[in-house]
Image (cartoon, rainbow, N blue to C red; front, side):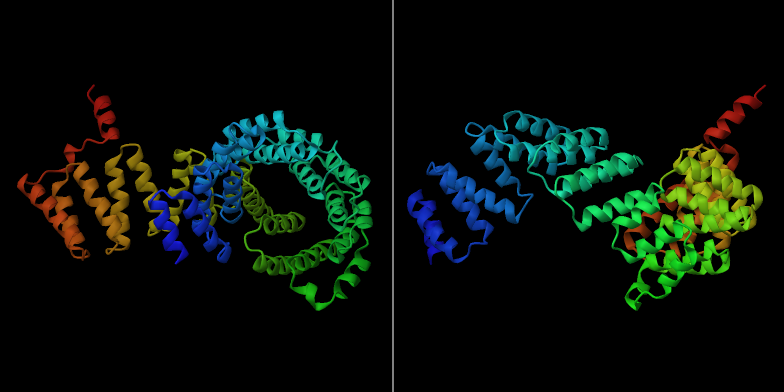
Length: 469
């Protein structure tokens, strides 16, 4: 009853009464966002900006991306609290993906911040925005300024160390985490962070001093050459550890150290089942194959490792080296051609799709790629030939039939287009599509037949020009 009465009061512009009735309803249902919006709106009408701000802030606690709440809070604080005004405007811009505008807003908020907590929180937000923009050096600068204050949290040190780790600046990462300990954060997270950085930097002796992680201890022991002790510890671990992907990487590392490469590869396969397509899988395999002297598989796995790490140029080079050793691996040829295409080297990629088509003349994927390549350079007659091969391999490939019919039209082969469109009709059930093709057929048949000699592809035109002399 209170809600209906509140709505009636509001419609009659009896705002005090409406506010009172909405408030009664809100006291019974304090999670209702609709009620919060109405109370916030009425608070503004009744010139109660502080109450309005409270309601809109409560909305954001429950719906962090609510645009109305941001707009109203920005309006409320524009002339009363510049710090909050810029903070809310910055948050709104950030949520909308306008990161540069958000950065400018938080810089302005920083300029009017009145206490240490505001300064730290604003600089933290700036650091995170810079990280999102890929401006890691600017983010690092913000974190280092924050570390000069006292009111800190261990997360700040961990985030700074993580940024240094991205650039493999291990001494700087260690320094950041050691500063955390000096500030009183002698916690497991900081110590495990230190252990991870030390191990990554090649200092297993220091890493083992900081970690409580049994698997990390074993990894350190293996790095330190304590092979037998590490293996004994590994095999004495409780069963709960034996379902961890790291357990299998350590078993693989032990077998690698013991020169049992076959067993190492088996453990890497077990790891891959738990963490499929991880760069680490291919890195470990590559190391094993390197040690075995298997150049081909080493190049393939280094290529896959770098491909997953987005090091495309290195991956292409590894795959090219592998192909020189063995050029009949269709999966590898597809990988190489795909990477070359992504890099814009479509001509080079086409060479490898041609190799695939020679190895497997009915490989529809390779034939499609070649047809698309020929279409891209205006060589429609060759496009038609590749599409014909697809149809020969699979006479019910509707996509290929449609493309072939259109290509025949491009090269003025009306007979081929008519025949192919008729084949399409045998496979299509959609009445609208059937009618569309019938219309095409009617148009083609009304113009009579013509031969491919009238083709107008770009390549055809160029060749015709040179043949005139």
